[in-house]
Image 1 (cartoon, helix red, strand yellow):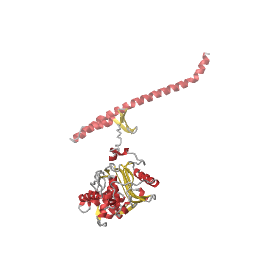
Image 2: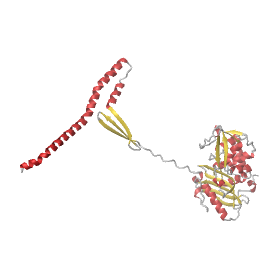
Image 3: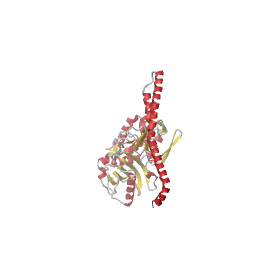
Length: 396
């Protein structure tokens, strides 16, 4: 049996020798991998004196040579390789090999999240006017609907509240320019004085642009162009102070007791009025054929140098087949909310509609549509409008 056992073990001796050789090779490789960085470091240090001598010799040749150069060379020897990678949106990892060792430095950037500023409340919201409910559930905190011929008040909501009126101001601006009978073909240049410093609003009418007074009036009434409206007031005989005085005098003449203007564009929240007063203004402006025509123009082109600028109305109801609008004007600044005044024929009646401080971009349009459908479906008893007179409506 022992001989048989020896015979069985004999074939395994070559395999054991091979296994031992593999183990020896593995140990050799590990030792080489461990000792190689040290060898590289020692070789780098052996080269250091030569570099130092070279620096010293160059220093001897040039007295102005500085010692930090030698420090930089030694630093480059210690830091053989550096690589920076991004490990995420806010994490940066730097991998360096120093003296045969790998160093990983992880930097995390702090992220500060800033919430967007809360929207500014309108004067009507601050006064709590949006808490007032109405049968039509309008988005506008102030509304007034009047029959222009009979002076019948069909609908009213907070119609005596004094609020900013935004670009509804331009209706008074356009009416005064038209009534002044100034030459509409006179060329007017946009100046730096016409640039909006109140709200910082943009305009395609760059400083230096020259258009006729008639074109500026068209853009102011149809597209609510602020620089156009300001230029009209600035070039009024007597200048801007005179024009603002005439605006307030015209308001008093029309019976607009709670209205005050400080400039011709509506960018200032100090331009304020009531729905009652604005109904008087719409009635007077609707008697002016030029103002009517320009306010309901759907689009207009102007030539500015080599360019052709296309302008469109700010009231999409002008293009609607469901509406027969004789005069309109829109307005918006944050203090005033969305505003709209119109003179339109609904169910055979010429109605004056005023919507102030509406919440939401298209809410004033939705309110007008709701009123139109309501008037077409109902017949209300006639009652007089306290501050709306026939003489004022005729503009006398």
